[in-house]
Image (cartoon, rainbow, N blue to C red; front, top):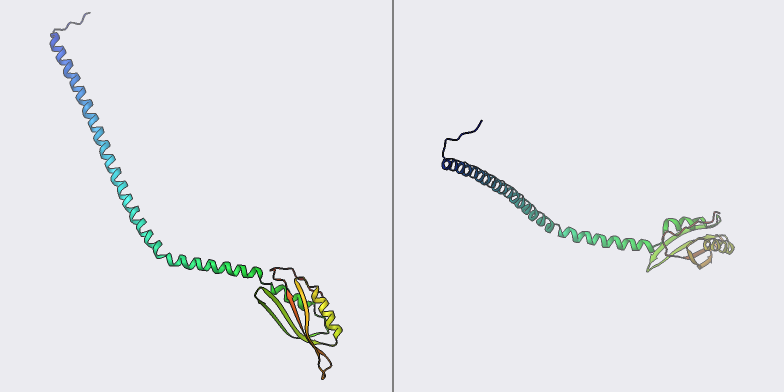
Length: 191
């Protein structure tokens, strides 16, 4: 079978042209709708980002004000750090008395009686002064020998040794110079 068209050719062309125009118009309207939707969505995203930016800007200004208010605390912290450093340096050169004093006490013979112990650290020098009574000069010399064997002791001198006529004992004063190295291991001689 054959298809027969009774409509004139011009009418078919007009109808096809109208269909194409209609399709082109639909595609154009759809494109405009998509473009408009993209613009609206972009505007909404931009507005949201602008609100977030303003919130961050306000938060940043508040944070800067808070930082400015803490400037005095920063200067105090710097002073504390400086003082800590000075204390740390002082502790490095000051002798460890907790180690030296017991070691010196262990170096004293049992027949010697101490009346006074003075420990000093000044101008980078540390020394200990021992005052006491001994039965004779030999006990003092023995004690000096024991004290000289204490680690960290650099020099021992007897600045005074006088005989007490009422008791017969010798009153003495020893000056002991110590090394200024902190944490020196001191082990006294057991008597």
